[in-house]
Amino acid sequence: MRVLHVALLTALAVLLAGCGGDRRASTTPALGAPAAVVQAGADGKKVLQAANGPLTATAPPEPLAVQLDDVSDPVVARFKRPPRAGLLFDLDTGEVLWRKDPLRRLPIASVTKTMTAILVARRIPEGSTVKVTNEARARPGSRVGVLPKKKRVGVSALLNGLLMVSGNDAAIALAQRVSGTVPGFVELMNRTARDMHLNCTSFASPDGLDDRGFSCPQDLAAIARAVLRVPRLGRIVRRRQAVLPFPVKGGRLYLYNSNPLLRQGYRGTTGLKTGYTVAAGRCLVATARRGPLRLGVVLLDSPDPATQARKLLDRGFRAGRR
Image 1 (cartoon, rainbow, N blue to C red):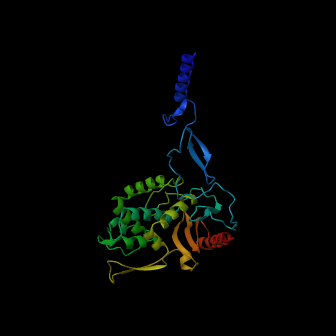
Image 2 (cartoon, one colour; image 1 turned 90 degrees about the vertical axis):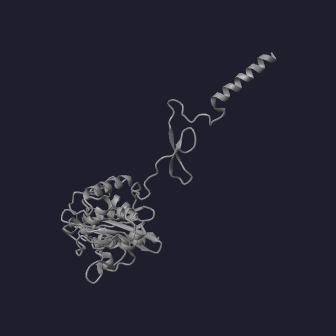
Image 3 (cartoon, rainbow, N blue to C red; image 1 turned 135 degrees about the horizontal axis):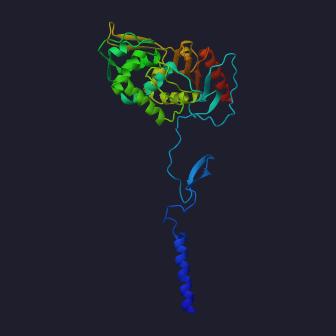
């Protein structure tokens, strides 16, 4: 009897060991079992939990994306002639405060240059120079306008010209400096857009002049957040005017920002970029700060972007104080 009892105990021990006595022995879920389940984390947010153990390594959501899932926007604003699409959002949290067709794909004109600026800041160190090509000098539309032929110009001066006066000539020169060719730079723009999960966006040029590129308010909000995270770009877009060293007669380049909120002295304005073509209409991405609260607004094809942006920002700041 004692021998039988010992044998039974031994068999039971082996069975228990094979059924998970050491849970670390295998990390493969059983056939038919879910690989992962969604559970609530400590902060109440949904997280991916492996069915057989600790959290799995998954790609996190893009940190610059604004949050469209909550449709109870705290700001109410109506316009007699509204923009075709727009968004008011918190620059720090990505919370959306007001929306109008935020996923609508539209041409964005020179707002395109915000992505150009991001790539230049990533790829060309401060203090570098850029050669001015004939192609850059011949680019029509808004221009810095005094680019010296076949001379090298400081990248800082061209970035200021790109963002403050929306220079198409500066956009071409900078694109060629980064990628060698304009098509190569456009390919880099679209690859970066995919990496940033900008699902509404496709670029066709570094300056937006051709109107073949497009985006939506949600994606432009993410790009605005990215611009302001780069200190050298943040310093440029909040300037009302600038005087910079430049290889022309007099040795100085004088620039004045096209942002209507800066021109009108709207309190707390920190940026960012205008755009206009006949197809795109008047476009504006504007940012401002009051105390600790930082807000951004995107308006695409607006009949009066300055007035509409001020109205939205004013109401956003009032809502944030409550």
